[in-house]
Image (cartoon, rainbow, N blue to C red; front, side, top):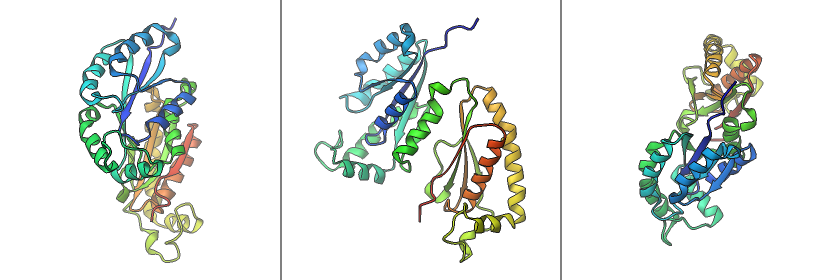
Length: 290
C-alpha cells in the first residue's frame, strides 16, 4: 500500500513586474492552492497548516517586496521552511531591465521600491536587494521574452497537478543565440555550424518553417547527419529522464538569429519526439525578432 504523497509547496518570488501574478493564476488553474502576499512572519504557520491539511498538499506561496523588510527576513524563514516535512521549491522570476521598464510604463503602476521616483531606480534597487534570495532559488525564470500566454503554458506544462501519473511533457524551443539562452532549457543544441539561409537572398525573409528553407537545409549533408545524431540522443535520454520522475523536459535549439536553422531543426525534433509517444509542444521564441 502506498503512503501519502509528500505535500508540495512552491514559493514564488522575484522582481516586481516579472509576472508573479500570472504564474500564480496559471498554477491555480491547474489545481494548486495559491496564497498571495502572505506576511513573512506567517510563512512557518502556513507550512504547519499544509502538513496537517491533505487538501493543501499542492500549495503556492507568493512573497515579495510588497512587505516591508522582506529581503532581510525571508532567507532565514525559508531555511526553516525547508527543514519541514514538505517538498519545497523556490522559484525566482526576473526580466531584463528594458522589459520591466516597459511593463511599468504600460500599466502605469509605481514601482514599490522607487519611492515616487522613476521605475528604473526601483528596479535596480530591488534587483540588488533580492540578490541573496535569487541565489537560493531552485529555478530562475527570465520572463523577458514571454507573452502572458507563453508564460502560462510554461508554468502549466511543468506543474499541472492533473497531469501527475501521465507521460513526461516535452517542449522543443528554437531561439537565437544573440538574444540569449532560454533559461528553462534542459538540453541545448547549437545549429550555427549549418549553412545559413539568411545569406541566400530568396530565403532571407522566409523562416525555417517554409518549404524553401527546409529544402535548402535538407540538401546540406551536415543537416541529415546532425538530425540523426540529435534524434538518436533524444530518443535515448527521454525515457531515462521520465524514469527518474521528471514530468517535463525542455529541448532548446539555437542558431544565430532564431529564424531559419534552429526553427527547422526544432520542428524535426518535435515530430520525432511525438512519434515516440511523448506529449510535445514546439514553439519558436525569436521568430519575430529582426
